[in-house]
Length: 192
Image 1 (cartoon, rainbow, N blue to C red):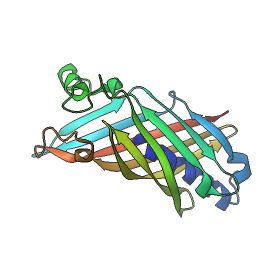
Image 2: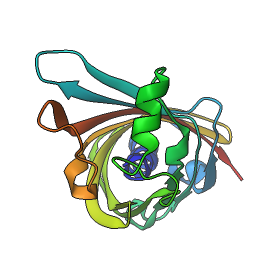
Image 3: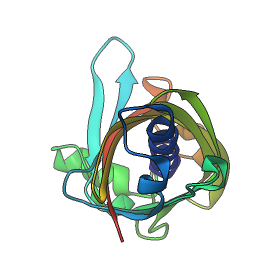
């Protein structure tokens, strides 16, 4: 889920850099970036029938972005989320999310995303498509990314998207809780 989002953001950053006369040249953004935990966040929300819902975040994740200065479509994103780092601020709910009913964090220690394509949708936006794997199930997911800034060796972007949790056998609580998980993420990447 997050991985795809990260990939989209990276590609968006590349596309917007090359199209804006006042922005940094695409060649200046080319390279490999490591996602920094400081300045980055992965938040999610799951709606509930009758209102309310569940809000949470992942505290541990890592990723790399490789930007191809000559062809944005050849850029690549790899991302890993550690489901045992999920937090909602409610211990009982956190334990349930980590259990085999949802993430099965004891046996499925990682959620991974690998981009397969990037499509520019505007001066500073793109859609990143990739393979998301969670609990041993792999599906194609899409996320929207918007470039927020490029400064020296640092890139910042916002990524969002929706994922159907039933596709990963994490649909406990439906239909009271929505099958759709909405992601809202901020990423900072450092070149190197």
